[in-house]
Length: 241
Ligand code: DC
Image 1 (cartoon, helix red, strand yellow):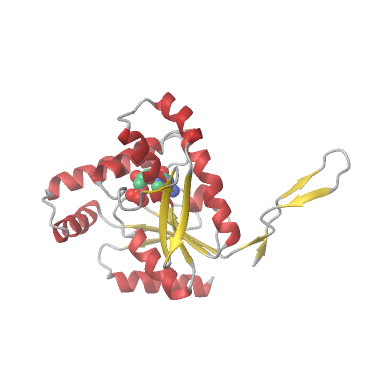
Image 2 (cartoon, helix red, strand yellow; image 1 turned 90 degrees about the vertical axis):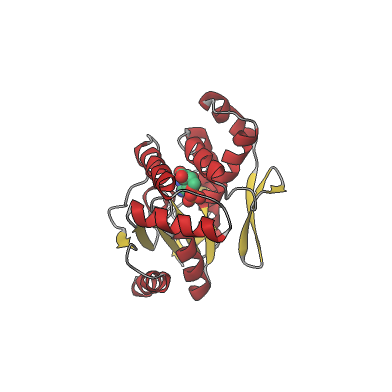
């Protein structure tokens, strides 16, 4: 366990009136582009080492879903309205559930539209601020494997292990295509790759907390690795930390 230096100090007396985040769990940050396999790997690695898996993309997707339902893409309106939204997470049988204003939306946020809208709302500072505290709070309380785009660079800059997981856009599109086909959905491989490249562009080039590899993150290119090999890599980086 590490100690956090955060505390609230009475400015008149100088006394520390409250310590928050007094103990922090161990944290493993996994960042990378869409479809790199972050959630599959993080979930399996978390099981192996009995950590809590925190999928931060699901939080952005929940906010994306809210504005998708309203058909709203006005950045100012989103910035204002997101402050009134409640996004919370809970665990049922070890699986993360995301609630939007009390509604469990976990089954509704996995569509391509919700993913694209998540990337759109994720550019907006007010949205990111709202989710930052929720994410940090979880890492204060639990041992976490947290995946996203800005975990190692911004959310948990002191994470014990940082990994940047990537794969070629062709390989990522192929995996997504297989996933959709297995679900019985009709899809086009080239379209999927185009969407993936567009989402990378948006996530890497936004002004606030863009996707990039933290300087101290280990780069893992999964293009020609099996899921088990990647999980093993993550677990061994954690053991060697
Ligand atoms: O990982 P995902 O596909 O579920 O994420 C959906 C979008 O959410 C992603 O394209 C960008 C945004 N996101 C983000 O900006 N920061 C995070 N930490 C996680 C996701």
